Length: 233
Figure: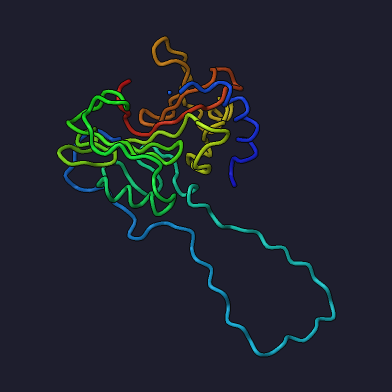
């Protein structure tokens, strides 16, 4: 699995440092969803034959490489959505999509007022649905849509256990929890690394793809990542 070796090393640092932490315009049209859920295809066994192949006079060694992609790896961390889904999609559709990949969520706040444990959010209602360390936010007002409940933000991390759950989501440049500042700048040379009195230490790959860091040195590691415009804290 991508990142697993690096994560094992970096998360040793992470767990000692973690502290529990778009496009403009509105649309009345749902963002596109895949016509079918992107799940790991089921393997079909070849039919059994009644004849026996003749014994070969030479011996050959064949190695097989698995190309199976885990469900979590399909949830690419994007500035305009998550996996195959764009921000703005109907809330129930997005929850169904992720549930098909990761199973039932660990928690679901249901629709609550805009000021809550998630911060101060836009609109009249919000909903936070969590799968381990992955939080999806829904509401009736954001930069991408208004007047209907829709998906508008995701946050991955900080890690609550010894490793990220789910493990697998990365950006299109393979940046994820445990990646270093050096790695971020290598893949995204224009990314901004900052140390702000209010926001703390973090990075910005895009206005709607940001994250927090353990420190701003080249070896500093990613503690959390957010796509979309999150609620103000």
